[in-house]
Image (cartoon, rainbow, N blue to C red; front, side, top):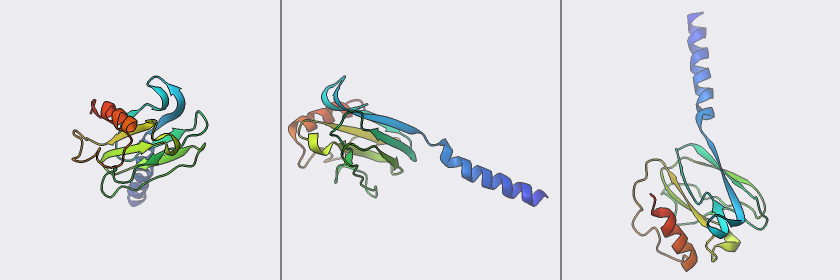
Length: 143
């Protein structure tokens, strides 16, 4: 009886752990508080294991992690145009996200996973359009 109770308690705890993770929503918009072609919110801080759900509020958008601008060991993701995508982020660090068709227009966002306190060296280097680079800099100012 005691062994059954212990087993049931361990099993219940293990199954309940994933339920503690949050699902946070990001809307993909043609126009938002920060201007045209934006993610709202444009900056998100989440705990490891949380899920981010990108909602295709307006048509013509997707969410894609930018290769070279995610933590080492993180899995890249790419949603389809006009479709919602859910991504569980379990590696601490900064994730840069873009809308593929509107990257040059600055449709980007940053997701900080865990206790990130500073921007990694070289994070904004590489082929980032000027408008996107400006928006990234604004988003990172609050880190």
